[in-house]
Image (cartoon, rainbow, N blue to C red):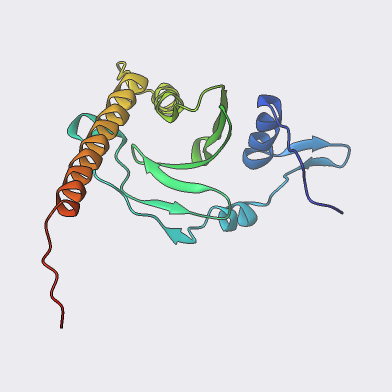
Length: 178
């Protein structure tokens, strides 16, 4: 078997993954589950602890208390719920599968954009909807502001660094022959 040259999937494929992850499937042999509860717990068991960065005050409602990488899945908390998710992207296209396993809720999203803040914001909008969180936090707009602020800060840091490097390179040095 050779290497995979192209892998194609769509939201329907993501739906199948969610069904396999969350609930038994009816077959001619009765209801079976793709993964046993033990296997799901093993697949979602943290393998690598990830750093949890600090978010600005206006993003605190989505601040994780923990974030981990499991076997192909990210596992974190969201508003006190266990959140299991996986993302992927390739040249102008992104996708995410999100599971709230203890509530038997899952959704998938595909987006033809490389703007990660759009998908991230929409994920939190949908999570709040399914969790019954009142109000509209407008997460896509909040995440766009967060990303734009980070880009502006990074651009400023690069500009300062370039000026310092330029200043250092123009300093006169005295040659000493021994």
